[in-house]
Amino acid sequence: MSAPDLRRAAAARALELVEPGMRLGIGTGSTANAFVELLGERVRAGLDLVGVPTSEATHAAATRAGIRLATLEEVPELDLTIDGADEVDDRLRLIKGGGAALLREKIVAFASRRMVVIADAAKRVETLGAFPLPIEVNPFGLAATRRAVEAAILRAGCVGEVALRRTAEGAPLLTDGGHHILDARLGRIPDPESLSTALWAVPGVVEHGLFLGIASAAILAADVDGTAEVTVLGSLD
Ligand code: 5RP
Image (cartoon, rainbow, N blue to C red; front, top):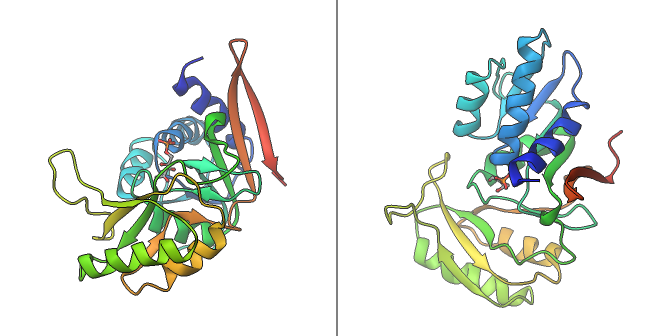
């Protein structure tokens, strides 16, 4: 099975959690886009709900799919958020932000009663950290913030390089919120909670891509003999 097939299988299972009238957080990335496409089909067939997108890209995709959207100002409490992830461990701790949307993704997930992750089972890891950890920072004082981030990483028992994320044209990437992203290539993060606390203590850090204690379940799709087998970590109730 191709990667898009697996993403669609995870998204299809998540769609079963969606009920009429729901206030739904909608994630960002290719797996979240597969969910948007399937959700759009249900909406066009008559399902009524309101979605809160986690990025400008998802806002555009959901609008194209015909999904009614609102902001968190209009709908500050959500029933469910469905989003992708870059890594997930067996305690449902995540790395997110590969698509640079981690700040809005975390705000939306935190405003939701439940967050369910959808992903290719290859995203499941024993220890977080092989995927570079995205850290969203204010452009002001970038060099000083970067040094403080490097020191925080060391204090949290991690080792690795920190790189400013750039666009294909080589310019520093700007998030939807007008911030930059530092990607920390750490290999492994032995204590994500300590790293989270250390990063939050740096004034220029707006948010980081460790989602700890936020997801209540993960729907993971794997290719088993040519068919998509879906595994659920956590509880979908
Ligand atoms: C965007 C994210 C995405 O959810 C994450 O990068 C996974 O993306 P994909 O489904 O394309 O693999 O956190 O900021």
